Length: 191
Ligand code: XMP
Ligand code: MG
Image (cartoon, rainbow, N blue to C red; front, side, top):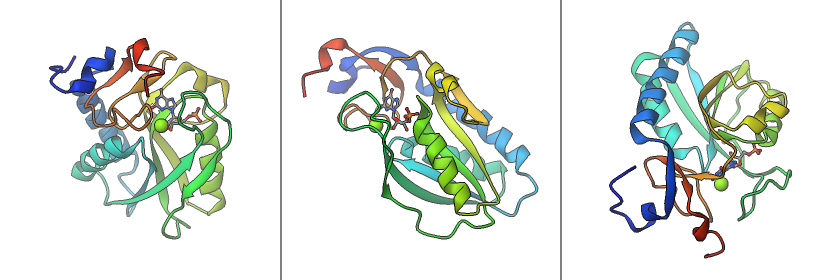
């Protein structure tokens, strides 16, 4: 794992995806998207706050190097509260700032778990008349396979454990870790 130099990386039980794996995979995904979108005028990345913020930043830069011009939008939706289980309820906390009609939209997600958030989001974006909507997700859990939600670009399929780091939080912490890992059981219930 990382060098353990920050107090909270010592809360990590084990690393699921390392910083280097994330870097390599992000470049790989960007290449695929660049090839698939070579002929479009521009793509509009829609990052899902807050979890996707790290991946959005890195993916946008990787895509910008070889792909079509990139524009960025953010939405914030909430399906989870402070805890680690889905409420099944999706709320818009921050909407798009502009019209996406006719645009080539790529949703940038940190993780697809049950798929509820994403399938809701895809319907929403399609209802706003995007030309097409694809999804790139850094992580996907096997549970996602239970809902029919098309994720064209997936970084890593990971076990059904709650993970933190690289944008993902537990009670708003650990987003800054450069890798994705599983917390020690002792961390839960502490704050
Ligand atoms: P669903 O179940 O709707 O969930 O696909 C998608 C959103 O839930 C959050 N999520 C997680 N957040 N560690 C986190 O920090 C996890 O293991 C995890 N699983 C789901 C996340 O915000 C995602 O967009
Ligand atoms: Mg979260």
